Image (cartoon, rainbow, N blue to C red):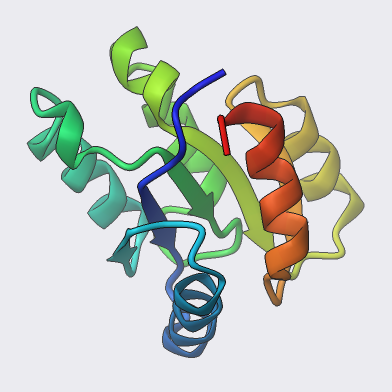
Length: 136
């Protein structure tokens, strides 16, 4: 079990989804800080920049699948090359509106994805996932 999560990273190219989900997370009080990234590249860049400073890393990443240029699966391909220390600290859930069965199966099969959550985010569902992995 990991300590209570303090930081969450939201990776989504959709401004509206970012606003809605960050508002839901703020209201739920499940995290102290929210890191907003508008692309997979931005998320990876943040992780690279803070790789040596564990306090700045997110405890939890909510990753959209369908994004231009770098989709969620491309992000995960690069993420798997990160040091074990980062992968152990930053748990990932897919947050997506996809109904594509292939995407769902691919997400569920990825060893770094702990859960597939549907948009919009439901605080209760998020809390259940967090309770499974974190001391809360």
